[in-house]
Amino acid sequence: MKKILVTGGAGFIGSNTTKLLCDKGFQVIVFDNLSMGYRQLVDKRAKFVKGDLQNLVEIEKVMRGVNYVFHFAATSIIKHTLEDPLNCYKNNLNGTVNLLEAMRKHGVKQLVNSSSASVYGEPESIPVKEDSRKEPLTPYGSSKLAVEIIASSYFRAYGINSTSLRYFNAYGPCDEQQPITRAVPNWIKQVLNNQPISLYWKGKQLRDYVFVEDIARAHLAVMDLSGYNYFNIGSGKGIFMIDLLEGIFKAIGKQTPITDLGERPGDPMNLVADTTKIEKAISWKPSFSLDKGIKLTVDYFKNSRFKMIIFGTHL
Image (cartoon, rainbow, N blue to C red; front, side, top):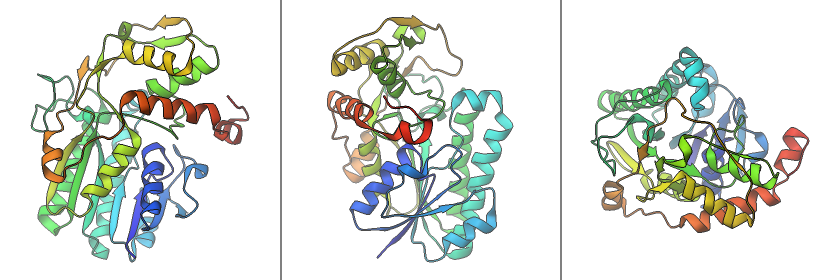
């Protein structure tokens, strides 16, 4: 049975991918320091190890016998990275180097890396292709681009195959980020609690939303690729944020007042993926429509008791 190490597997995308790996019969080890993730989100079929990528000894201990690494662990809240860029670079760069060093020492040759569309910054044209100009607007975006370059060097120097997946806007169940910065879970919770909606840029930003299960499937689809690879992961379709909000109102069956918060630093106005490259390489395409994905996400937040466990309240 193949053994897969999932760093950051107690977070949003990591926990969803861990569940899919367990469903497929893989032996999974989740390595997470729980600074941004939650033990309750980790599938019970996976082995959980609390540890930090800043500690090389800890990561080396769990690397023994591993065949693949899925790397999700990172400082990812944009506001935090703007306020404390040094910590962002320390966690994202040093942590990745430690991970790759542990892989090198233990002969692990397959890495799937969680990257981001934030590597592009404000794109020159839409949709965004993988070879488009890269001028990140935030420390987070530049750290993700740097991680890709580091992974590339470890392939060329040591033969560690790596594939970086540049997510556009991920959404779906188990998005328990604290503090909440992503629009979909924030808006759903605000509507369910009869609170005003917080909206930036008057909702005129164009975005590409991709359901978390489709993202998880992409990880499994690329896990055996050789060489150094990078792909956009998105729906290939843009939606204005105000229209996304209307879809959430419709799925819940009610709406609440909108509070315009103006502009937000670090936000490009238009960001939509060109997914031609991955479709040709491995025939991956998103299978969830936005309407279906929003309904599943709304159902999760309506029915989840996770907030009671962590925060003492229940929606």
